Amino acid sequence: MAPKWRELADRIAEKIRSGEYAPGEQLPQIRDLVEAGEGSKSTVHAAYKALEAEGLVTSSRGHGTVVRDRPPLKRLGIERYDKAKWRDGDEVAFIADRVASGRAYRRNEQTQTVSKVPAPPVVAAAHGLPEGADVYARARLVKEGTQPTHTLTSYYRPEHVEGTRIVDPTPGPAGRGGGFRVLYDAGYEIDHMRETLFARVPTTDEVQLLQLAPGEWVVELHRTTFTADGTVVEFALGVHAATRFSWTYDFKVPDSAAEGGGKE
Image 1 (cartoon, one colour):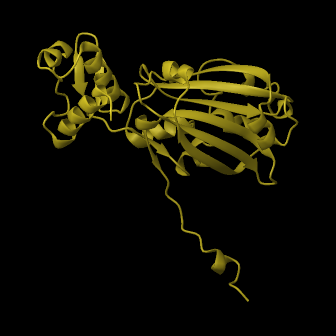
Image 2 (image 1 turned 180 degrees about the vertical axis):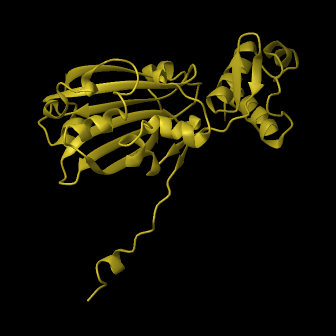
Image 3 (image 1 turned 90 degrees about the vertical axis):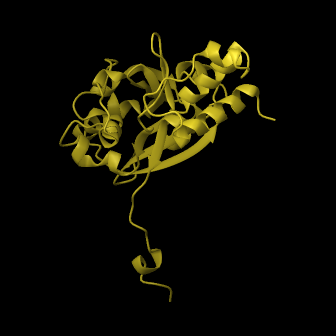
């Protein structure tokens, strides 16, 4: 049986989707729903926080809780890594998502910390290093305005990035074109990637960092980036608030039989 706050959130969400509550319309005050018998103050508050985490409403002091008129951000698949965006321009991946979504952005909406750390098992395996070997961890928290959307930590071999802008902790992308442009200038042009996605329950720290409502899940991303000769130049681990993104992949359907000349 779902908790009361979840049942209330689902009822309000249905009214939003049906148009009973229109975009830009303010939802009833918490005290009004309490007086109407919809639940305790904490129940209604939790329901409103869930709706905010799911991208259906926004809440602010002085304006209450208002139906959101923007869909979740588009998280592009292949197109976000187009070399023309970061090699020839300054459209790093998170900015490419904002542009595709028709949303405003500022470069300093990405903060970061850089440190040399012992490679965790998954990082060591991706880079082909012994567990505990030194790697650089470049950790970013990305926000849309004041709301966090996701974290992304990229791990690099020291010999690939030492002395470059990638290890500069200045907030925002690592200069024009971001980290991929830095690798390109250092002679490590990215050629192909492998991404793995899975959903899971967030940790307590992730709930606080991403400002998640009770019951909100996250999507974890593992991204391995290779040069043409198969050298791994980045392994990235991202944690995304699940309902703040829609994931889009547009690609040519392969035909391995035709490409291999068919079976004999």
